[in-house]
Length: 353
Image (cartoon, rainbow, N blue to C red; front, side, top):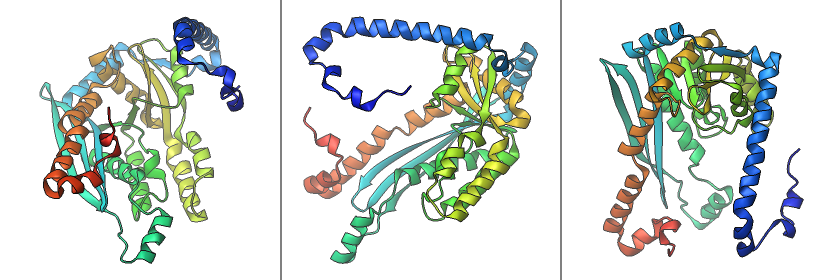
């Protein structure tokens, strides 16, 4: 049963800091102990549930060896991206980087693609137009920029020569399915989504997910096991019903769901202490699980594919958001002086610490 909002905000559920700090450690330990006990009970229930256990499989040593041969012969690439955005009066200065990695010649090969530009806002030519734009809330949305990055990640992966492709995230993420993230986006994004699924050998690996029901089901897994949880088409059913858009757009999304997303399985795998979610075409679901788990053995404590983590690491270090922001701030101060820099300076930077 969900927590009741009205009860949570009642005064008796809130304490002054001095009283809270005296009891917080003991209360936290008690709550965590209850949580661990419930988790063990839940695990026992799932293990004994025959209907659930039939969806659980083990990757054999032979399959892992075969997956290793595919990995280290350079037949698998991993792609990840990063985005930095700096808001300005005239628009948003944005830098998007995409990294692809693969194993070749006993080393990890990397290729970095980058694009930087300013996405201009429409500026009013007179007071009337200014207030019209203000009332409409015109501007470049973060979802639009996220959609560009997700599109390029998948397009670059699609055009690479490797047989198998790891993607950090969902194969067809929400920002690619949204009908109106930006002019001209819907049609090309859906076409790309269809091409990804037709290729069949794309694997999405999700490092952080709000699908707690799937992750919680992963508690039943022993290291080296994986399970089939659901189809992506079932996951997006509610999303399509509530989609903002006209009847034609809903029809298009329904077609995507029934013809394409219905072929993508959602799985949970475990190599180390923590389970993770992955997506793969139903025709190659078991092979995909073996590849993901074999690469995860390269860092068994984390239990996540090394190729993806390496691409993510390059994104964070070579294209660090702080470096991008500081460079823009320096240029603004250099070109615009105190007032020019101050206007576009992020509010958080002006706070007294």
